[in-house]
Length: 55
Image (cartoon, rainbow, N blue to C red; front, side, top):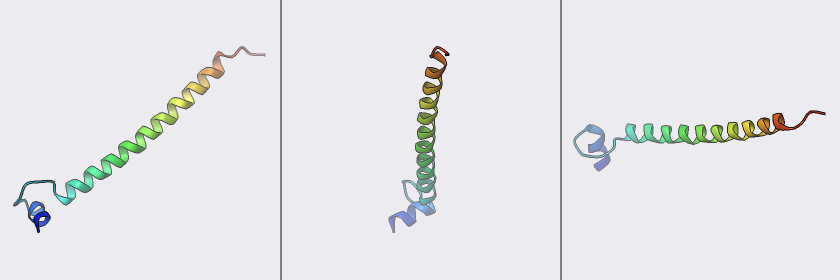
């Protein structure tokens, strides 16, 4: 009942739609952080390859 009042704007708090949006954004942030870490690792790997003397 309390959540229904919040969703209708009659009570304080986060609406269900806002909570779903926040959850989606948090999921996206996790995915982007993971992708960023992968890219950093790849950049380090390729930088090390470029620093090696060629044969």
